[in-house]
Structures are given as C-alpha cells and as structure tokens.
Image (cartoon, rainbow over all chains, first blue to last red; front, side, top):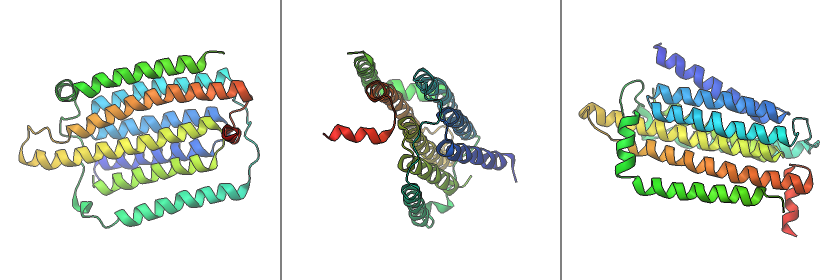
Length: 166
Length: 111
C-alpha cells in the first residue's frame, strides 16, 4: 500500500471521528476543539490533493478565524457548562435514523456510477498552486472577487447592527 | 486514489452534519454542523477538480482544467466566513434577549 493511501485513510478517520465527536460532545468547547481537528484533517486532504493554496486558506480562515470566533462567543457568553435540556430520546433517535437513511440512499445511488473507474490525481498536478490560481482569479473571476468584497462589507455592517445594544 | 472514496467520505461527513443539525438544540453546535456540511462539499469539489485535471494532465501537462472548481471552493469559503459573522451576531442577540441559546426558544419568532 503506497504512503498516499495510508495517509488518505488516516486523514479520513480523523475527519469522520472529529465530526462525530463534534455532535456527540455535551460541552460546546469540546465541540469546537474537535471541529478544529476535523478542519486540520480536511486541510491534510487538500495537501494530499496538491491544492496547497486552499489548504492554507482552510487553516487560516476556518481553523484560525472562524473557530476563534466560535470560542470567543462561547466563552464570553459563559456557555461552557452543559445547559442543553434533557431532550426527548425518541426525537434524537428519529433525527439519527433520518440522517442515516440519507446516507444509505446516497451511498446506494452513487455506488454504481460510471465514475467508478476515475481517480483523483494525488500528489502531482500544479493547478492548486497560488500562482496558477491567482492568474485565473484576477483575470476571469475578477468581478465575483470584487463582488465578494461588497458581501463582506454588508456582513460587517450586519454584524455591527445586530451586535449593537439597542 | 479512486474518486468514489472521496465521494463516500464527503457523503458521510455531510450526513454527520445533518444528524447534528437534527439532534442538537444548542444553536452554536447547530451552526458548527452547518460548517461541517460546507466542508464536505468543499472536499468533494476539490476531489472532482483534481479528477478532471488528472484526465487533462495525461494528454497535456500544461493544462489548467479543473482550476474553476478550486476557485469555487475559494468563493464558498468567502461566503462561509461572511455567514459566520452574521450568524454569530444573531446568536449573541438571541442570548441577550432570552439568556439561552436553546434553539427551541426560536419558535417564538412565529408569534
């Protein structure tokens, strides 16, 4: 078994294990920390696929900025104790069965696609490097790039308006 | 790596997110589950981009096929970052008004 496949399975286990621990943990702080583990594992997947720019952006934006924001909100609001009320067990079971059925249906549908013989190119291929992505981003996708700055402006204004004590 | 492994990994990750949204009531944990689902989609987009690039790479090594998929992932991350700021501001506002982040309180918005 080549090293890339071993890495793929390790990273997949980390990703799924972290994601499951996020929804199992009672304490929201532990959920955030397990989510950071998940995001780092997904970044590892990106590096394995040689999408280096997106791997770094994933670490900076998700594991850095967004998770720190979550941690700040949880700690500032003092939510790190178990405040979740005891909830109907059957409702939880129903939610799990519903999600599991979706997993079952999607897996069954996609089991026999014609994509079966295709492979994702691992380590080689340089479309994920910053230089190549930047050229396309600032030539063909420059308008969406600028529009996303307006989106950020509106998000900033929205956060300020919502967060202001009225 | 066969593309179907990436498909099944992404589907499993997405379904974990859906189960979290359906079973948890803490608004912050629900929000984190939405992030998990977004990341599942991102992972599959990059895997497909590399699949297309691998096919084009075999014919021509200078090909840039599949670069659009990676840029879509970049824009999804941009939108997710904007979404998180507004969503967390809404959760903070909810906590100020109700002193709880229990999602069940949200149904009083109906009245």
